[in-house]
Length: 136
Image (cartoon, rainbow, N blue to C red):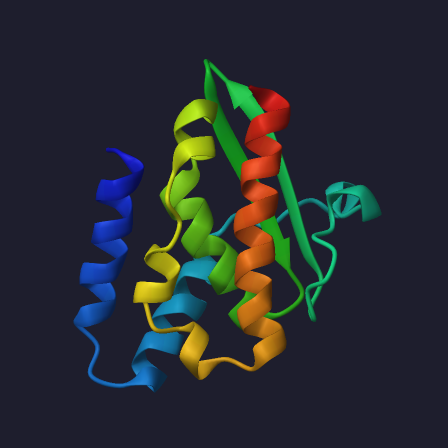
């Protein structure tokens, strides 16, 4: 499935919820589904700098595709990084680098987050592309 298809799938799922509380619960649920990151990988070099909460992001190349591993000490932040993992995981580096990640704006999440958390979404997208670039 392409990145654009995955983005549309997320947007379609979010449309099913009537209010923002339900949408937050959905995002938190995505975070809970992320496999936990081993404590030995929670290192400073894998931290996304500038986020209010601690967010760790790692990536490796597996058969020409980027596989992401992410975690956070905050449930909502873990859910937000899970959105990006869901969309970008198992994609080719070049596809990630050229992906338009403005879908996150169409989720409406930024409008209902504190400014520091909303900024974290941009930082996450940037770091995921940076990791793909390093693996390309």
